[in-house]
Length: 244
Image 1 (cartoon, rainbow, N blue to C red):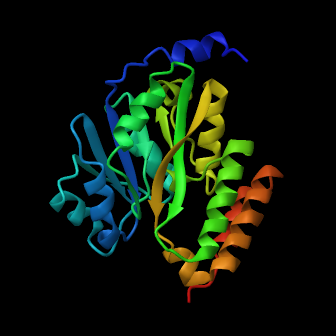
Image 2 (image 1 turned 90 degrees about the vertical axis):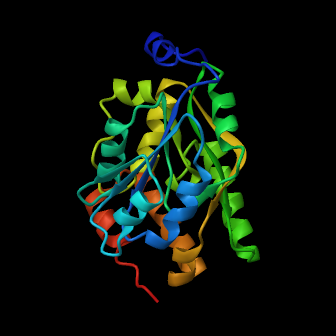
């Protein structure tokens, strides 16, 4: 299916030399931040940490680790993502979780993907650092969700052409599902490409709350999104999960 005229305009920038801004929303991520900043350090890459009032010195650590910009934000990942996008100077915005790292060929992969003007954005393949077999099942489910449903999660390092966000006036504040909304906006303007390169993600939240329990909770939350249930209520339910 061909893109509509607006989408063709938005996707006009397709050079392999596009500049990239990394936006990393944080809240008490001091110890995880070093790998996220370290793996994305490269020529032509701007790294922006948007901190939501961490109590563990995350913002100070970001400055020590030479992030190009460190911003303060109200709580809420959607707000942090939007603030980071508005401060960014890159042609492409890549949203990276603080506990996720990318392999050394990530920048080449993004630029190669966007050399196709039909591609509006994309995501990486979910991979957990843990070697437990159960995580391979979760990774398989993520591949199906992304390839069949076009809905990658934020821990897959979503990236998008800046022109797409400019045309839609940034990222609206929502209490939950900001990553799924972004994926749908990308698809509304062109192709969303799933890269084979991995986004290596920590399994700490699964381990803290129980792997199977967390997977079930995430699956129910996705169903709530697809059924368009009230997001405030879904967010309140989702964040009640007990810490172990």
